[in-house]
Image (tube, rainbow, N blue to C red; front, top):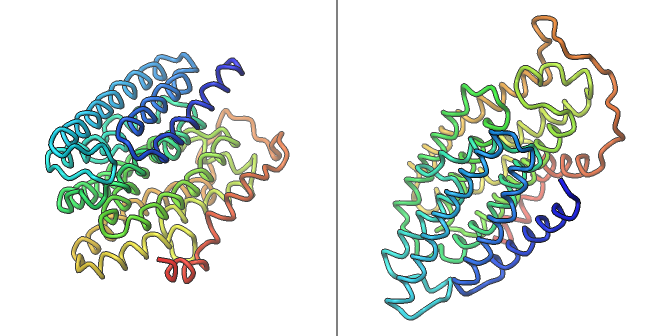
Length: 346
């Protein structure tokens, strides 16, 4: 890709995200979302592979429909109340339309169909952007209008997302699709708590982004795309593979690691809100995700290939130690001791 084109798309992504997260007016928030959508499309389709072109078209159509619904929702609210402020969304129809639009933008069930396909058609770097940076503006809009949203609808969508994200990830062999369903499952955890504690949703998103960035950057370094190649990647980078296993277990939410912190706090808050049944159900559904994370961890570090492969074994990778991966990986595993400070601030 042309360096100038890459610079323009990167700056546009930054601009679109900044406009949306810093705006109070619906039209400005919508403008930021549109800039973001148009900026990421060249990055998705840059390989010119038919699957990449298909992914870019799917992404464009879904995001265009979601942006139309955001505009429609804000216009109806302004028509009935005279307010264009993001925090003044009070009309019931507008609230319903906005929830639908943000669910489409994020990939929440039942509007999740596009997300695994788009991630599968993108490169690992673009998939990382789609899973983290592109989710930030819609989550900010949800955060600012959280007091107006329907609790029953959001809880239903959240539990359905956690269930489907775990269930559909079980039989996947493509790692990008597994991480897409992992993202859908984590979005379920974020949506279930946003009405009761919006700050906790943002904390969950930040930690999820940190752990996902670690996983994607390691996969990008080892050039691993599917389970059959992950089994021999240990010959290239043994230490990186051990780090990959810990990052996956952190993403699964196992106790000594960072990923346990948001799940623990969400279950704690749901119990305080007398939503014990919802907390129990979503905690049980996270076991489905734990299964495929453990499978990935098992494939990456514990097994030997059952038969001879055509890949040339390399005992050392031809790259220097990657400092960003080292820093992000450390953060994605070792932040649990900060939980008392977070509990005091919340």
